[in-house]
Image 1 (cartoon, protein in one colour):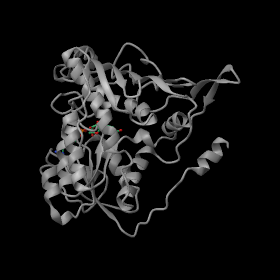
Image 2 (cartoon, helix red, strand yellow):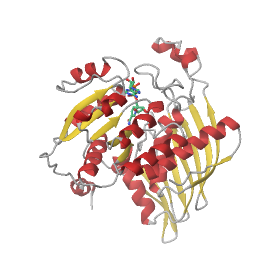
Image 3 (cartoon, rainbow, N blue to C red):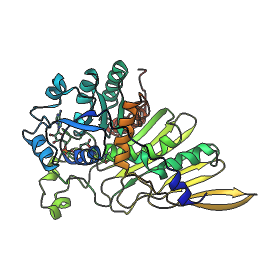
Image 4 (cartoon, rainbow, N blue to C red):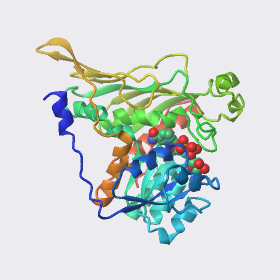
Length: 385
Ligand SMILES: NC(=O)c1ccc[n+]([C@@H]2O[C@H](COP(=O)([O-])OP(=O)(O)OC[C@H]3O[C@@H](n4cnc5c(N)ncnc54)[C@H](O)[C@@H]3O)[C@@H](O)[C@H]2O)c1
């Protein structure tokens, strides 16, 4: 099978537009733009409401996108979800990290399906509360990891599951940007009161997902973590963008590293950077008893595959390498993130990116943060829910 056959074989669904799903957007900032763009491309969606804490922001947002008839006179997520007249089927929660858990729990309690932006939450405790609300509600909760929709990500999982690598025992993952602290629309990514986590949560969650999803999300056992913020707290860093005052507001990490033990004797070696004096802290590698896979990092790390992957293995006793060419995904990843969420609601299906997996992702992030704070290795304990 060639690459073209593969592309032809990717399923493109025909959407039944006879029943429209009623959608609300909570938080009308930067990422909400990607959500609305994708919703507007879906024939079975009606956007009926939007809320933002900043007065007038939601109204201006929908005007900008030319979407009419959307109710926006809400002071927060709460008033919007309390408005029974909306008959909401689902909400996209596009708020900053510290406001992920609260609206998600409230929406689920109101019987509304939730597409929650990444990272899942800031702490493991919050994530546990969200999962409890999800279980009680019986509604769909999907976490916004669009790199999951990428055919190359799926290929990593297929390679592991095929047995080509044998028993996986060591993984190195992570990525970084030389200069990439995100401040495009202000400081909600860098202030502790809004973000809670820096590079560790923002892009770290993707690099953990890349490998953990491939190996079936084994339970984490212990973690020794480290965090720093040398770049974010330096006024010189922001000179080019004319905001040296951001240095004083910076309250999260811009680099994190960790050594994690997973069930099944697997070691996970992790590092992630929003800023560093280096091009990349390394490719992702998955080492196994029969073969190993090298996944090149992207230059400005965003959770995707940076180039053709290489499988190192033996054929008839001879050491060899096989190149796995980059696969093209037919549809946009964001469109697929929205579409798979909508399909799960319509078909009474399961969440495309389920909380049962991302709870483990969050437990590791939380463990790294807590271990870094106390300066020693700690156990990771995920409560039964
Ligand atoms: N999936 C992706 O590719 C991607 C990309 C960028 C950001 N994100 C994630 O999206 C989230 C938002 O990021 P952003 O850059 O859009 O932030 P932002 O600061 O631009 O927008 C967040 C908005 O939410 C509003 N808000 C906060 N709490 C609220 C509440 N309870 N009710 C109503 N409105 C509320 C804020 O006023 C703000 O306007 C973050 O968690 C981030 O990690 C995901």
